[in-house]
Image (tube, rainbow, N blue to C red; front, side, top):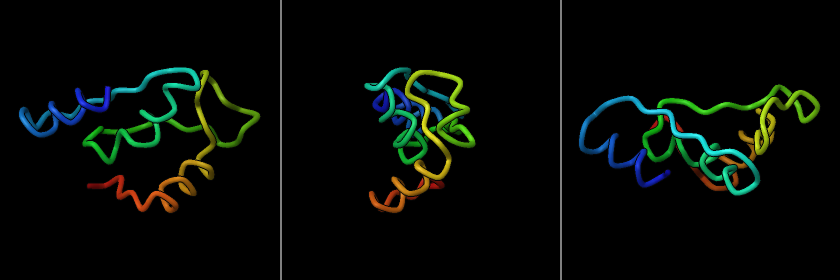
Length: 73
């Protein structure tokens, strides 16, 4: 999915949202914007998650800081 996001971003300059679900899909939620994804989804907190693999906005921001990701690329 990250490869698809990057290809669309680099080749077609089109906005794309690519999010996978479940524990294995969490990486697409965290890294998608850094690969050119238009947006990602996060919950307000752990208790309000609406999909498998969805993390809280605080955890997402913390992960971006720790990974030194620039989601605005």
